[in-house]
Amino acid sequence: MNHFFANLLGMLCLSSACLQAAGEQPLDIVAIESHSQWWPVRLTLLEDVQAPDGNIKAGRDVMLVRVEDGLVIADSGRMGMLTLQPEQTDLVERARARQDIPWSGQGKLSHELANKLIDPQTRRQNNPETFNEVDYLVILYGQLGTEPCQKLFAAVEAAQEQWSHDGLNCTVLFLPMQTGKAELMAAFEAGEVTWPSMFPYLSTGYIDVLHHQPQNGTLVLVDKNGRLLARVESEGEEQLSIGMAEVGRKMQEDKLTHGVAMPSTETAI
Image 1 (cartoon, rainbow, N blue to C red):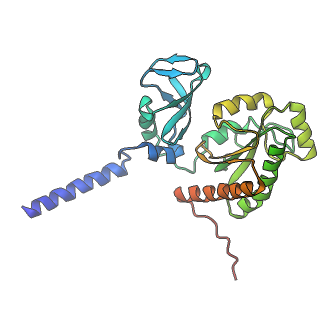
Image 2 (image 1 turned 180 degrees about the vertical axis):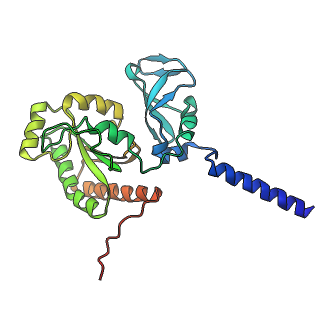
């Protein structure tokens, strides 16, 4: 009898292993949140929900912005931004269908933003493939000519060398707030803004849709698919320095979760 149960247990374990190998293991919101490459572009509402500008019926598709703290943040278009429980959508089913997509693939958010940004050197629009190899986006929000924005710029410029030395594959983007096109172009000319930037007529809409709810002088670190990893506000110099170090640490930690080894910084003897 003991031999029989031992064989039965072995068969059950083998079946479980086969299901996992086939990608059939149960998904929870924690796993989905940490694997942003599984995030779909769209979701379908499974029940009626209350939006800022009215009620939305079940069956309506919405655009997934990100999964954050176990919640689903989605854009319903003219009805406004939504914060939903995962079970109000078909997120789990859609994520399960994407489990074979590797982290190394093209980023959804980096691809979406690439050709909405202007290169400060050429003053030309980037092409959609500009950020294909980028893993992390460091998004700066600020009003040009103000102290919070200037302090944030200085802190980021100082931190970029360390991020590069640490082998962190990121790019910095600037989304201006309450800034005119002529002011942005003058900042390009003066070398005040050295990162790909969005023209104000576009940045207003993207600030709403990205839903980071920034202050003047806010830095937001996201992965290439939009997963929120860190947020830094432009406060005192010491706080900014700590914040920049935290941004670098978050990128290093997240990189390791995807099975990508960090390059060695030791010097060969």
